[in-house]
Image 1 (cartoon, rainbow, N blue to C red):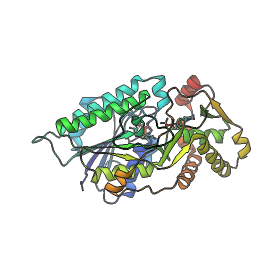
Image 2: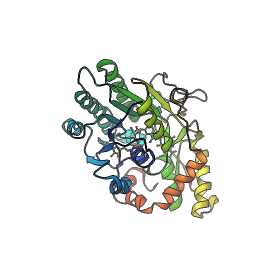
Image 3: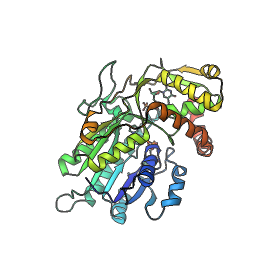
Image 4: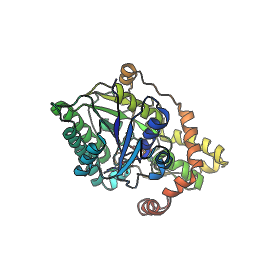
Length: 361
Ligand code: NAD
Ligand code: TYD
């Protein structure tokens, strides 16, 4: 079991990263070290997501450094300044639709940014060959494996077959991470996870977008026939898995993480309508009337589904939150956190949406 002291979290102001920081500082007593959050605060990064963490742990166990993972000199300074022994790399451009509209940022951050971090880690940890008391954990996605038919699951040995600029850039970063293990002996671990949901997710992704559009009476845009399938996992379950791999995972290995919880988009939307209508006192029939089938996403992967046998057997990880419970918690969070929501659904993001999608929300 590794003892992790000075952890560099990249992308800690984003959805999964901020939940990871909360998990470690609020709910993980065995972690007594320090977290340095390196984040560029792009449109998806939000310092409001960690304001209370800053207040409670800032200066001592939590430090925020605004910067770009592509900035080699800056990243190298952080390794020295904070004596970093662990990297958990969440920072990325993460939305498939944006990768179709503008792929360049995805290549920059996801490919060049990951490369820059790997180089900085290699330079910092190159003592006597390569330090082995350190670890670089790379957070990736199931989308690198491509699209499934009606049956079958992705395993860790499924060949890579990315279809969108997002998944292609994540696949490239995965290959670089593995190459640094095989070529330089950099101690890495990697995880590929299915679709996450939960608090603090940027509301351009399916679940928060739908919750907020329902609340505001806006159309609910369903791509294509609505029968694409995703395997949904609650964000805290994903982060527990990441933490487990960071401490106990075998160096040089990758692990699949998923919810083992497949839903067609349209069925998921019907469940969400029932929950939101009840909690926000809306008429479900009226809300159902706002479902709007829109033009499909180009190259839209039909089905994702993860086989999680390796992490379950090897590291004794299990999902802890049922879909029902997770959706309830997520809906409650979006209905209760108006300041966080309004901070995003106004100004810059709203103008971007109107420019690219009209009034869809
Ligand atoms: P997000 O878009 O919510 O957050 C990304 C964060 O990275 C933001 O805070 C942003 O400011 C930061 N960032 C972007 N470019 C940067 C740069 N050049 N330098 C420094 N910081 C930068 O993403 P997320 O949903 O939290 O995803 C986190 C990671 O998990 C990503 O690597 C993503 O590929 C992976 N992943 C996400 C999901 C999912 O369902 N969201 C599923 C599997 C894997
Ligand atoms: P998304 O949250 O963008 O995640 P990903 O593309 O990484 O899986 O989308 C989840 C699914 O929901 C995907 O099949 C696309 C679909 N979708 C819609 O039907 N309407 C929408 O407005 C969005 C954002 C997604």
